[in-house]
Figure 1 (cartoon, rainbow, N blue to C red):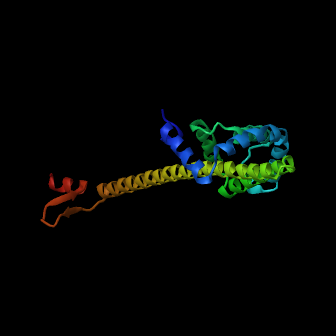
Figure 2 (figure 1 turned 180 degrees about the horizontal axis):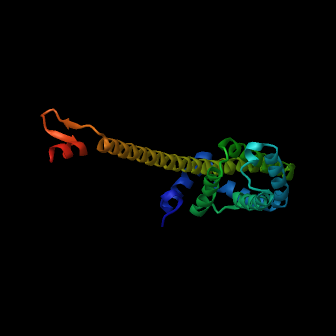
Figure 3 (figure 1 turned 90 degrees about the vertical axis):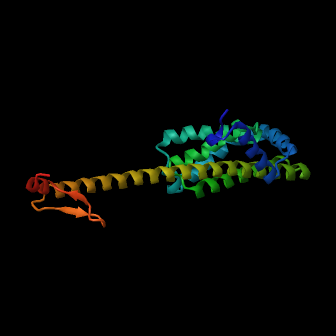
Length: 226
């Protein structure tokens, strides 16, 4: 089947594999994240509260929200996303859903800098919880903090890739509209030229380099009969 942005499911899985390899997300990390979710989940509402409190402080980010009702809906969506972030499964469907987040950010006009810095806030919040939870086990704490950093970086990479694709698509649409406007302008100018030439009260004839008549107006036909 087809997956994200016209890619096949296999290609999408290849992308996930490449990103996991690049950020160093291991199966041990996946297990740690799954274990950590149960501990972190009670904190999700507080993370979402802080997240949207900060958004309200920055007009450029808050301006993309239609109203408070939408902000409340997104509050719940953020908590669902946090659950997926920590437990996966990290497959083609995961890539598609999380790529759509980036595309949605583009469609509502959210600037990329807000998305990138928002991920930093999420990463710090989760790492703070892990540090407090595993403070008596330094090894587990260090490995969990690192796993959180890796999955956040992986998710950000997916959204940024989606951002790039959406920006390209939007740019192509803008160029298409611009070309259509230019064609319309040229058509209108051509029509005006023909109208002016046909209604002119003078003879208009044009010849090519070989002396062949290539253009004449109605006045020429009236006077010559040809």
